[in-house]
Image (tube, one colour):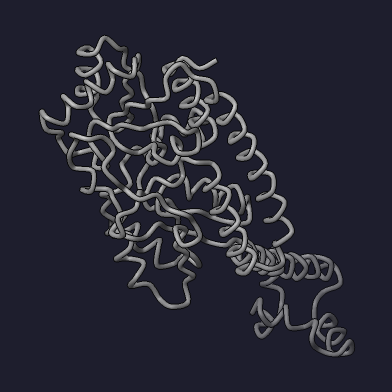
Length: 354
């Protein structure tokens, strides 16, 4: 190919000039080719074709890359349950950034510079407001007005945090929302369904051409959530005990749905140490109500729950509040649905349901 170029007159050496030949008149092209020995013309034609093909492939690749980026909606979600909703509704039409790292509690997350950068380049962010994740709310408030900000609490009916048991303390500290409401809405599948519909509406507005796909995905996920809700209702309908004693007050929405009485060792704030008076009141309640299982949680120390279980002659078992799934569990295929079913199985066993 180099030899062929050397045989061209000097003014024809520029590759861009050769490629521009196609823009000249047919006669001009014939004039050029007459200056080249007949035996070399085929090689020159091959050279020009190869160069043009390379240019077209390059342009096509750039166009495809641009199209792929344009066709994917970039979303940020503040913690795992919202990530699952956005991922299930959006499917391969969205890229979802989780603001809370896997395996960490959602309440006290501190956003890194990298996460803040990802958030600032999102087209929409889904989060829970009212003081649930202060650092996330602060970051959301500073975002460009072009980014859609969806507070998924806004369409839900929230439970008040009230005194759970006479003699216990600390029910209104820590994770309770600024409005005095309980933030753990996702633990009732009915609330997950409401939030799924809000996400569907938002994504469909951002990318109308994918609205049918988003609707299909959302309906499939909602059907699975409805099935889970039915399982909760039937599995916890007939139980020897209706007292759900947990390490912290995260399961109020699930308990309300199943008409259980939740009593938590640490109130709403998992880091809050209960007083001796509170522990005494909970132990008395457990004995009176024939509680056979005290539940502790992932991401929290189990010491208090196990101590209380020993004191009242009960066993201790694990529940997952599903707000910070570890990378290992995610890699193993854990989802909101699978973890809720595991919770349901453990609760039904612990309350001796039939």
